[in-house]
Image 1 (cartoon, rainbow, N blue to C red):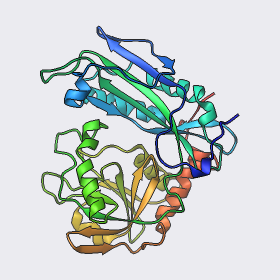
Image 2 (cartoon, helix red, strand yellow; image 1 turned 60 degrees about the vertical axis):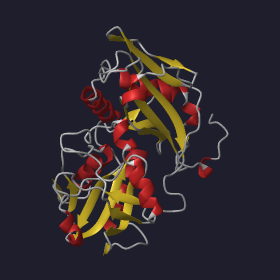
Image 3 (cartoon, rainbow, N blue to C red; image 1 turned 180 degrees about the vertical axis):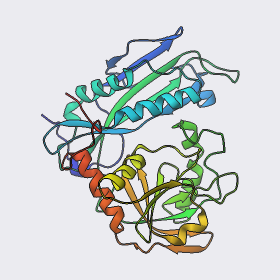
Image 4 (cartoon, rainbow, N blue to C red; image 1 turned 90 degrees about the vertical axis):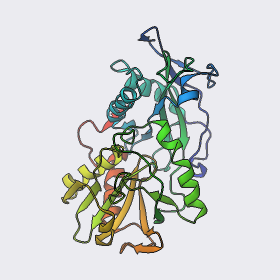
Length: 340
């Protein structure tokens, strides 16, 4: 029996749920981990996360499919990416199976907060890890916490999908050989000023370029780009400093295997923008956010798909992937992970 929530009125924000998973790393080993009810964290004022931003996180969703099952979408890839983030930030990698066990236990414990099928809402899951012991010299912490909480969220687009306007940003998101390819909290902290500035200027998002040459398209502050050429090819930017989006990888597979489209994952020059018919931002929250206009220092690049709705191919990709996620289209093996 679901809790008494008006699912249709939910926004994309935090609502406390009763249970979360916590595991602690101390003396060179992880605890077993457990479900707890306390949502408060007590750490030293000198904790590594507070002093040197030693933290990484993930984001995924649980939802109800057309046949009434509670599932998550490709959580094994989130586990894999969290391990990569932890290794890059000199944090201990979780024991085999702990990430998946945390997902299972938190969703099962908060099952009444999983929205019903067709509501447009989902149960958003936030796994994260941080340095908890005191660190005053610049070095990794010695103790860590891994946590996973859940919060019900409404559809990212309330009132329908409308293409957004973005700008080519003068700030850099990630340096070559830096941390742009992992989901580190510090990447998002450094993007906050840029996104606030973009909003002040009347734009919805930023298009970041490569920091070395500022000629290649990278991503936005929290999503990968997906382009469609005028002859119907799907193109996604390739760079060692781009976060490997699970949604983007899934959309590319769907484009090729389900829709029969040609997919190119390659470096994309800023100068190529005039050649594209459609553009979208790929991420867990919205799946695809369509882009209607890109402004490059006063030069307006208006995508042929327009400002009224998603482009034709972008819409087909969105419909196919959300259909797979919700169980109305057969999913590739292993993509939907059922929570019993």
